[in-house]
Image (tube, rainbow over all chains, first blue to last red; front, top):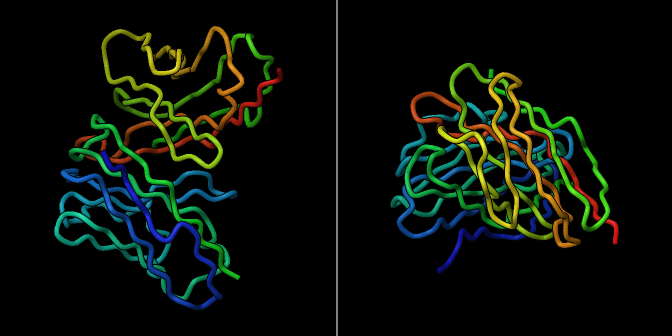
Length: 115
Length: 115
């Protein structure tokens, strides 16, 4: 079956511009997660959704980062006024239900480069 | 706070040799522990997981890991490495309130395999 998909696969943007990253989870998965993979910080948790609700936003690095999920499916991660330190690969994952007892399936990521 | 340490950034082994990748965690309660692999150009794939019970767990691709509470360790092993095992390996702990809802990753160990 179809896995987690993310778009775009690559995004180059100028410093100060806003970007939107999209994640399509596996159909039927109620939990959705965003992580960021960067050279300096490794793999770090950003936010998760249970349905359309985000109970834990503790990993968002600043108020320039926001995320939403609609219809219990697609999620969008928005970065406003991008900075060079935002350059990273943004990974999305989904699981059948919330809790790490359920395997998280990862998408291929969106590579963001801020120039 | 929960954390995961992977002491080895790079490891090189010869094909056919045995492999052990180290992972230490810091977590107050009984941890949920995971090993993921990321091959070049590929997404993260779950190798194995530990929640409770038998401390030696078997995973895919011939990997196993042993949970040692006294050492706060969850080392990954493989008796005979294949060239296709060259990849980056991440240890992770399930963390967060309630149902361990997010993954905290180590910095990763990059494995190179010599023919």
